[in-house]
Amino acid sequence: MTWTLLSIVVCATVLADLLQSREMKRAGEQDVSTRGLGRLLRMIAHRAPLGLAILCMAVSFFAFMALVQRAPISFVVPASALQFVVETVLAKSLLREHLGKRRMAGALLVAGGVILLAK
Image (tube, rainbow, N blue to C red):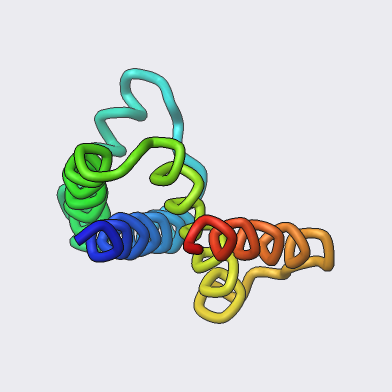
């Protein structure tokens, strides 16, 4: 059950982050004033992918809560860092982001750490 919950946390977080990134890039720069916040809330209401991103964040949050009930936080937090590796790969392939050598090396180091935790 631990690995299932961890997979849910990682997948839901990755999906939420990718949806947010894509939609906010499409929307352009947003104002963070009171008026800008109202526009941002209206935009979220009219863009289904942003609503789905919020739902995914909620799923990730509740799965994380269930996970820390079953496994030590010293395992859960580092293992959930796998999301950074998955997001890095998907940002390159789906969002066409440029990844330098340092960013790729960092993602590989995180992946190595997760592998060490798994044993």
